[in-house]
Image 1 (cartoon, rainbow, N blue to C red):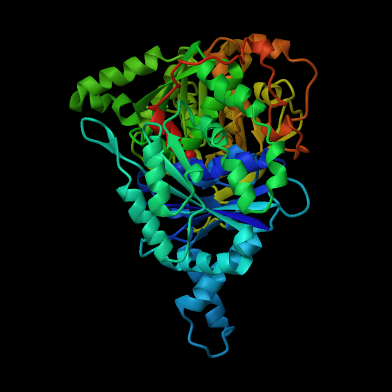
Image 2: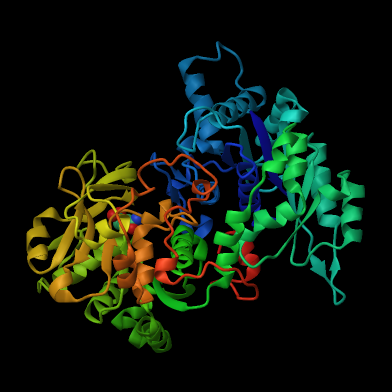
Length: 617
Ligand code: GLN
C-alpha cells in the first residue's frame, strides 16, 4: 500500500480537499486504484450532529455514515463509494481506545495518547486503506490521506505524531507528503509573500514530517523567484513547488497539477514511476473541465433554502445541479431564495425582501426545495411548491422538499386546510407527514433512516422510471425521520398526486409525481431520498437531469430521443475502462443539444473562481 498525505498550513479553507481529490484523480488516471481517508481532528464522533451553519452539509454514504463534506469530493472526483470508517475523527479514535480500556484489553497498563491513541490511529489508517471502494475485489494501490485543520493545531497533534511514526514504519518510498499552503498577495505592487508558507513548513518539519511537494494557493500564478525562494527555505526542489492559482472551475485543478508534472513527482517518491506515462486526462479535460466552461444556454434555478447565505450547506445539491447542466448542455444560474421571506408575514416585516424573493421565484425556469430540518421557512417552502405546481414551473423536491409538496397538495387540492407535518406541528389533526422511525416507535435518538435503501418503482411509465431507465427499482441514499402518512395516500392519489416509488414494504413513500394527465405539468417530482449524493460529473443524477432538462424545455426531446433502455450505473458497479472510469457512458449529449466542445472565456455558472477552486461553492 502506498500513501499520499495531504496536510495544510497557514489558514483553513484553502482547498485541501480538492487538492487531495485532484491528486487521486491523477493517480487513478495513471491506472492505479485509489482510496482516501479524511481525518477530522474534532471530538464529535461524526458529522451527523454538526450544524450545516458551521461545517457545511452532512454528506451521507451508502452505509449510512454521516460524514464530512470532503468525502463527497472524493466520491465525486474518484467515482468511488466510501465507508463511514473512511472518515476518522478524534471522537472515533478515543471511543475505540476507551472501549478497549473498559474491556480490559490494555492489561493493567496506563492508557496514554502516545502510544495508545497514536497506535490506534495507525491501525485505523492501515485497515481502512485496504477496503476496496471501486466496486471491485482486491485492495487499492494508493490511499490519499487528508489531515483536516492546519498543522500546529492542538487538536491535530496526536494525528501528526501518529503520521510521523507511520511514515517511519512504512518507509519513505511508500508515503509522499504534500503540504497545501497560502501565498498571499499584498501591497499595491502585488507582492507574493512566502513567509506564511515558510513558517508552516517549519512547524511541519519540527513535528518530524518533511513535505515532498508544496501546493501553494495563490490568486495569481507563482512567480519563478517566489518558487525559488520557497524551495530554498522549505528544502523542497523548485519543480516540486506547485502553483495552485485560481482556475475557472474545480475540475481544472487536476489539470493544473498535471501541467506541472505533480503526478510524476508523486509517483517517483512512491517508487511507481512506471505508471506516469499511462496518464490519460483527455476525457476529464474535454467532457468535464472544458465542457463546464463552454456552456452558454442559461437555465435559471431558484433554490428555496434556509441556509442560503452558505452554499456549503447545500454543496452536493449544487454539484448535482452542475453535473445535470453539463449533461444537458445548459449554463446554471442559481438564485438563492430565503424561504422565510416568501411567507406572508415577511410582507409586513421585510417588504423589500418579500418582493425580491417572490420576483426570483417568478423569474425562475425551475424551483428546487432541498432537504432541511426545523420549522423556520417551512411555510415559505410550501408556498413555493404551490406556485410551481399551479404555474406549471418544473419542481424538484428533495426529502423535506417532498414532504412540503405533499402537505401543499393536501391543503390546496384535497382541501385539508390544516394538513401538516408532526415535525412542525406535533398536535396537527391532519398529519400528512408523520414520524415513522425504521426501528422503534418509542425512541427519538438514533432513529434517523440513513444511507442506501431500495425504492421499488410502481409503474414503468412514470417519469422517474424513464429518467433512471429502470423498470423495477432504484437505490438511493436517505437521511430523514419523517415520512408521508400512508393513510393519506389513497386520497392524494385519487386527486392526482402519484406515489410512483415506495420502499419494499409498500409502507414508505419514496417518490411522488403529479399525474401527467390532466395536470399537464412539465416536471413535478419529489423524492424522500437524496439523489444528490450519488451524482457524479459525467453521470448526472437522473432526477436532477430531468429537472434541468425540463427547466430548459429540453426534456421531451431527450426522452423521445432515448433509444433502448440501458442499465442504470447507479445500482450496478461498472467495470472501469477509460470511459467508464469517468462515468461518461451514460451521456447522450447529441440527443439533447449539448455541444461538449471546448472553448475558453465563459464564466463558470456560480461563484467566483477562487470559491470554485475551494470546492466549497
Ligand atoms: N426534517 C425531515 C425529516 O426528518 C426532512 C429531512 C431532510 O430533508 N433531510 O424527515
